[in-house]
Length: 215
Image 1 (cartoon, one colour):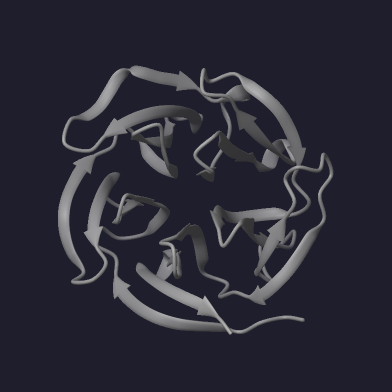
Image 2 (cartoon, helix red, strand yellow; image 1 turned 180 degrees about the horizontal axis):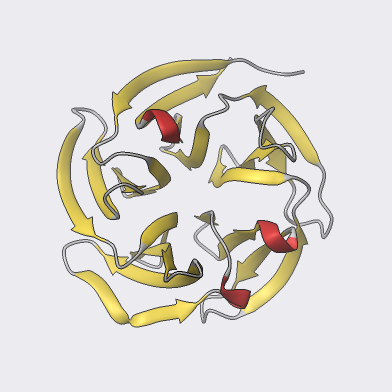
């Protein structure tokens, strides 16, 4: 049975079009396309705690291994790379590595592994702690965001025209998992993060960030 999205907060993005987001501790980190910067946000006061230049356009964020892993786009060919950012210390230039086939966007972690979506190859890649690909998971639709929360892997699914967005669960333990739609989402929704109680997403083209629960 489909649930309903109940919006809790909505705020202007601190740096134009936001897409990737992740909680690192209690702090929400958001990457913005218009400024190519990361912003640390206190969600209780909506105050900016930090902002850092990104060495490329940010496409994916995940808190993993005491740092924030970032997927960036670089160069005229829009090649994708992994970078490691440590709050208070900055980006580690030696951590930059190419994403497989130089493509990828949304990123999530369950604390044990990293997961990267690659829509061009219709798959999600799971990475071990050493950065090697552990397995491939079939991506059953186009994707506007992934995240872990409430004991499950969630995804914002979209049709081929990137319309009809749905929040859905996905059993990533299966090689070819089926989507289980949970609720309809705004057509602008990009990125997904869970703070332990509520979900967060970006309304990218409106340059807004919102939190919500399901009823």
